[in-house]
Length: 133
Image: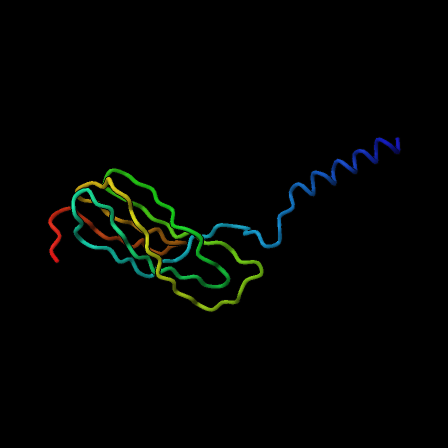
């Protein structure tokens, strides 16, 4: 009986340890607030486009990556962050992030930047055509 009980306790310990994470690993992937979207209104046909997102990294959140999804006439971007453990304080820090939206792109499309919570998304309309210098 003692052997069976010991085996059960040992197995529970192994399963408990399997769920542990490093203390420096992120515990979630928050959506970060973007305060500004800069994009050209016209790009050359067949080209990619670079947009600049001003990302707010506040209260211990760090910038991790830009997530992109596409539909026929829309490119949706989301600034994804990471929690810093321990948090580095609550100082507001704005970071300008350049992101290249690769071709092929439709002749006219909207870039939409998702926001956390109830904040409205940022948008920019872009079309292909003759680029004037």
